[in-house]
Amino acid sequence: SKLSSQCELLNQVKMGLEEDRRSLMEHVSLLFNQYHELLTHSLEDKEHYHTEEKLFRDKLNNLCRQKEKLEEKIMEHYRRLDSCPTKKKSIGASLVRRMRKA
Image 1 (cartoon, rainbow, N blue to C red):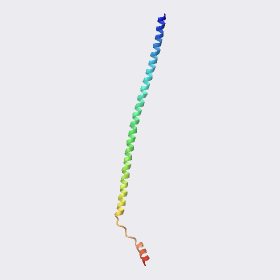
Image 2: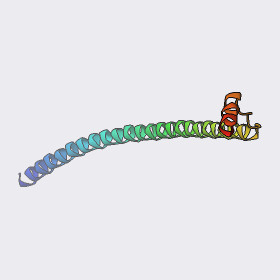
Image 3: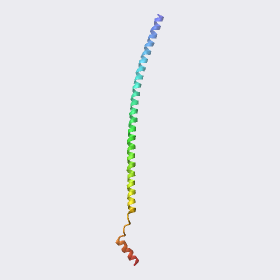
Image 4: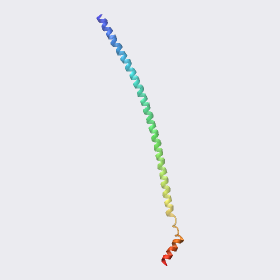
């Protein structure tokens, strides 16, 4: 009887431990699923970040090229202005000059 009560007690402890193990395994499985979802989400975010970064760099490079082209056009405009012969002074200006001399 003492032995059978000890066996019964050990069986109850064993059943409790098996239930705890099952519960812990379910919890571990849930945590693994959450980890997998988080890892997948993290990788998608990283890919999205790199895609956005590439688009940003492309836009920035495009703007830099446009800026350089505009600077070249401005410099070409100034070069043309410098190379043009100075316009003859208007008749009115030469008339005023003659009147002052007289």
